Image (tube, rainbow, N blue to C red; front, side, top):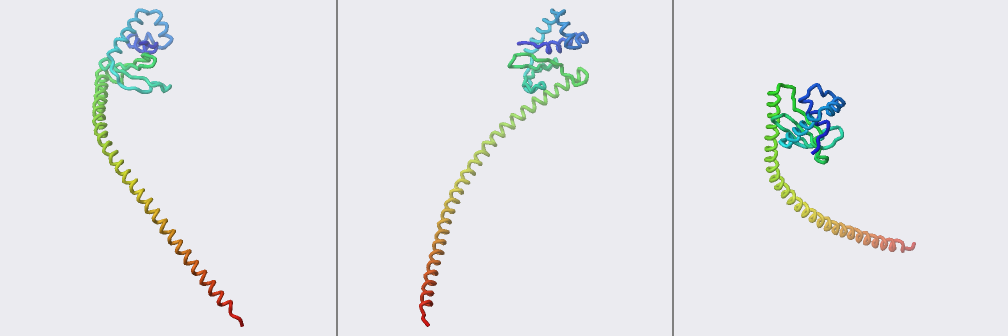
Length: 193
């Protein structure tokens, strides 16, 4: 596992304070404090091994998905790139309160997350059962709709047949009427004066 300079700098800042105020200062500090660099890298690796997975999400503006790990007792959060196998950065969770209040607040959030996950799993189990029942009902309704569609097709076909019979009868009536008119005209036109 690799540790980026940014992660190392953030971790070292916790112990070195104002000595590491920027990236350029850190680069200089790193050159002259090789023993501390090794010590902090080792400490970071050990600390990361005790970290628990928290979530995955976007860490920076690049939209890159990273994994977030947390060590509750230390209030440390790691941003880890699984693909590159890098600790991208590390930061200390601070809600702007006292140390004790920060720890309590973190515990509240983690407890909330834990409880919500349990509730979500229970909901998903219940929803899964309900979903199965709803899918069965939906399938039964689809079958029933198909049966009605077939009945409608049959009724439409019968209706078309009846409409053709009506049309045929109407045409036959017109033929009779035309024949009668022709016969009347022949009789009427055959009279000589």
